[in-house]
Amino acid sequence: METQSKTRILVVDDDPGFRSLMETILVREGYAVETAGRVAEARRLCGQHAFSLVISDLKLPDGDGLDVQKWFLEHAASTPFVLITGFGTVATAVEAMKRGALDYLEKPLRSPDELRRLVRRALALNRPERESAAPEEAPAPTLGMCGHVVARDQRMLHILGLLGKVAPTSATVLLLGESGVGKEVIARCIHAHSRRAGQPFVAVNAAALAPTLIESELFGHERGSFTGATERHAGVFERADGGTLFLDEIGELDAGLQAKLLRVLQEKTFERVGGGKAVQVDVRVIAATNQDLARAVSDGRFRSDLYFRLSTFPIEIPPLRERPADIEALAGLFLERAARGLEKPGLRLSERALSVLRAQRWPGNVRELENTMERAAILAEAEIEPEHLTILAPGGQSAAAVSGSLNMRELERRAIEEALERHAGNRTHAARELGISLRTLQYRLKEFGLTGG
Image 1 (tube, helix red, strand yellow):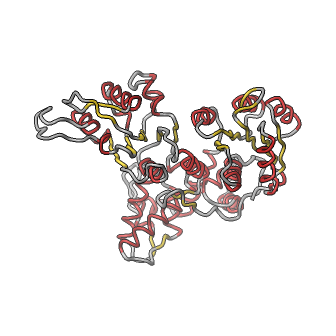
Image 2 (cartoon, one colour):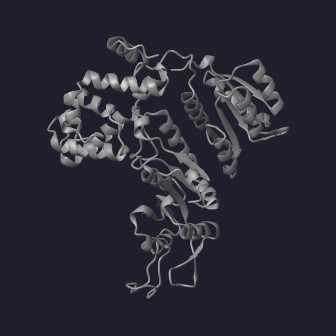
Image 3 (cartoon, one colour):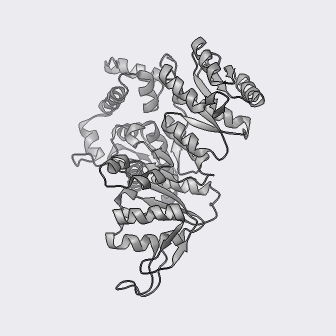
């Protein structure tokens, strides 16, 4: 665990009472704390000390928190930054996060635990390079806001923290990430912890609908509006009224539908296909895409005004191959779920099978891993071995075939080499990604004759 006595935190707030409260909570946790009431004072303190974390209020007498953030970005770019913001100013917090802020903290503080959790999360995400010690055991899998989200990877833990902040608001959320990373699961978590939780959650995949049907599915149609329209049809916006609408693969919408979607987001009204009467709805939209929408905007394929409207609160979900520390936790969750359904309570993963799972690239991400564990649970009777893992490699071979040509030591060696390459030889970061301790990684490097950078 990080030595807290060596961790210095700067708190910037012009309210002496709130500043004192923050200092008291953090000092009791063992952190060294410096405080400032102005931007200029924060700059002066930075010249005297190196800080592990900066927590700054938005409104300050001689500027604002974004000025503090800008100064640290220019003079101490590696210092993590958290913005304190009043309730209802989420847009400013999002702007700070787009500039690199890790998180934001709402004022007034709801509880000391809220601050403690935020600080621990921020420090974990920005553990200094000089820290050579690492936990002897990989962190336990953390259940998120709902049981379908399990994480060990620090980026996913950070995302789970963001969900708790954005869920109670009315902000439009844009989920970015490859197919299969769990965008709909996260969207359902946001809805379940929002003020709309008792209202409908409606999901629609734009890529799964024929171009001629998308408009009718989104906005509905009147009877007789086209051949086959024998009665009035309510679209997903009407069905989600009062609740949440999850629009997956939003980048697949054509220009005309993009304009109509923008109108709904701005005016909360639309017209059914073949109708002339405005229909008013109250819907929170969570959009998702596996495309680079910013590039689509620059290429003229996606409206810039719609993009900015959708990306009030963007969350990028990393692919599974970039967070292998999550693989064991997720595989365990999916295996337990499958075993329960098949009434095979004794099913477990062998170390050989786990090594195979860690060595995969998972182009289908979490969805592919879930399907793999379900198939393995059907095939195995007690312990799951590589031959039960029907993962197709890029060349079309299954994991069983791969494991026959590459033994477990070679698979483990390859996973370690790839992790070190991704982290430019940094052993601490590679161990954290692999979900093992630094000591275990060092042992393996010696065993395999690898320098590891």
